Length: 71
Image (cartoon, rainbow, N blue to C red; front, side, top):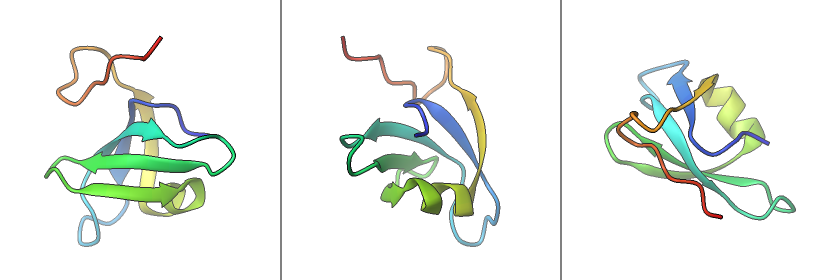
């Protein structure tokens, strides 16, 4: 499972740009809700995320697309 706010760096800019994980559906389904720098919304399985992106660090609150954790 890739954590919320993980920065995703594109492997091929012709397919998709850099992105960030905004939310994760229940662990049972494992769907990651991803938003690209251009504002496109994607729903991807973890295997699809790993195929399209290099997994980067978890963003800090200063990142432009950071999402506050829900308690």
